[in-house]
Image (cartoon, rainbow, N blue to C red; front, side, top):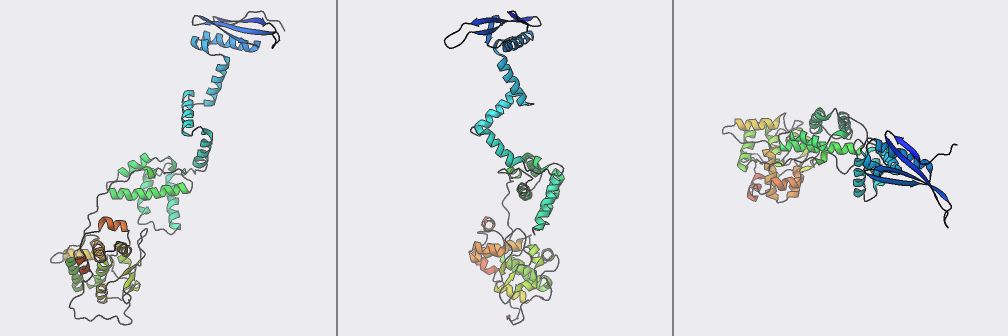
Length: 418
């Protein structure tokens, strides 16, 4: 090979960078050696950088010449070949993410994880993304309903009212893409606070199920749980008074005897409308003084035995007990209609029999827990809505309303159990 002549000149455009060779004498620690110095001018100053290898010096000279030729004077003055190669490698690692953004994310991640950045990322990937099923909201909702029905949960009165509306709004997109902001906007479009809260609770149940089966990340909260509940106004409980309940019983006995038994169980036992219409005579024991709810409301503590007070037994003994069910179809609706048509009109608001039973039973017994069991709802609801509505005297009077001087002698004869 031809021995190069020094200084070597490396050119790029009109820019020339020189490489000088010099010998370093032998010392006690090192043998005699050659040193190659790269020299260039930038920013009105002369800069140099030394290398023990000629090829490295040539690469550096080429880099400086290209930088100066491109007008990057400040870069040429400060950045050497090693720094340039590091920067190039960093940019390749960052990919499409700007290098500064990548460094900022890395710094924040290390601070959040207290230095354990990579282990934290691995854990997140394993628990959040590796097993998430890619499924549309509509498909997930259908699987959810099917799973609940397979588990024996009745969906007609609850989920079947919410999920079609939810699918109409979100069915086409992946369930994992729905945000709490999207859900909040959908809930806010509903007018009545209690309706909104009811739909929200069902959607929360749906999202928790989706998380459990692997359709959503196993994070602490689902997007549905991050939505806000609506503030509900206190319920205005309407109840019957003792004289009103007595008048309704007498009206049914005199003019509409087919509906007397339904009226008795509504007021003396507090059965819900759906429970009352499904109640069978075979589940009522007049001799033992109680009834077993034939069709309890789902998702409530409603499977229960309800005591029959002596007055209720007397009224039921006056009823036709040869039918299968206590109440004819639409029984409570017709009872309210007959009350409106009576002369004079008798007040009978929706749920007033049940509300009247609970209010007077709490007043009579003073036992909220016992009343909640008999009514099939929670102690919390009774504390919230039914305390101090009536006094103890009225409570005792309610359950003391008897058929009156009908002249009939009441006996618990054999075979009278309906």
